[in-house]
Image 1 (tube, helix red, strand yellow):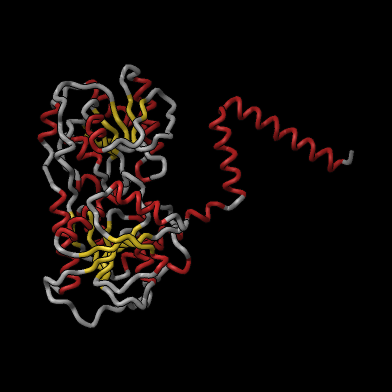
Image 2: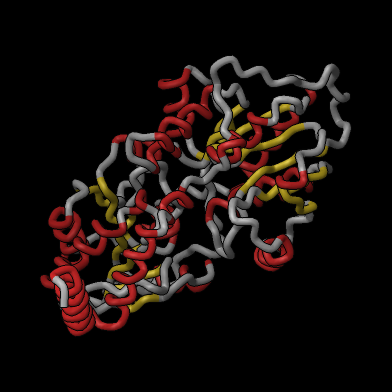
Length: 409
């Protein structure tokens, strides 16, 4: 046998031994994850993470976007296009967007939903998801791939769809931007960060969910935004269990870095070490297998989530960008949110029952322990402290902003 052949055989044998060792130590699931990761890297699958086709990338420098030569008379029914990615059932961001579409339709306007699908998924499947999960929405569903029709206004709903809308420079329409988060923060400093940031220079009229985003756009881009205030559904999220409680809950999302997945698990591991008698509940991702005993509830319905909150004394509510709806919904159910310290979050969440902690595993675990072992407010008192804000406040603001952009202020 040649030296080369001997080396090749030795390498193959070493890889086989390594595979057996990994299988024993990590189990079938861990071994499969390693195999998938190797294949991901060798095939260059990371390229699929870039959320835009290169032909759809716009540039604020020298951007000239035409508008219609005349405005319709105020009161004329409008047609408004909304550009979004295909939603998964239960998507919170899509749910908020669909609430605004429902409000426009209730005001007598027609909406058309344009789906931007990088992977050319089945349009029928996407339509079935939308009709099944958001049955009140009447909007026609189309694909961006079939072209954008000349309608009264378009609303971009994320930084990739803002690029899609800005890159159609031949389209004479009014352009708006429904901003639910400061999306550059979704990425490390790099291409995606820069391209997401550039969307705030496109000149679209912004509508932000929450005041924090409006303040950021004003400070960093000298742009004034219409604020659609956060709402929550008090018919679903309410205190039904006024008795003292035990246990904690965490929104565990592996695919959303801004939700602090690893940090939350590290904090809960330490919390379990200190309080092994306390049940730990997870939701948001059925595939999560934490390194401590926990009950994973997968993706519960809003009613099921309300029931879960009503079981627990405290919850880990992490968000490193704009606030999520989780803290208010926990509070409404009488559950104490333990949140990561942030000046932006504090500005939007001033409830006295929120427990703030530095975003480290030990600090979060200690704060959870204090809630569990302390003698704080009763669940009914916590629930009563939440200022009820219905979504119709945000809906009115959004409808008014779109009408003003089209009709003229």
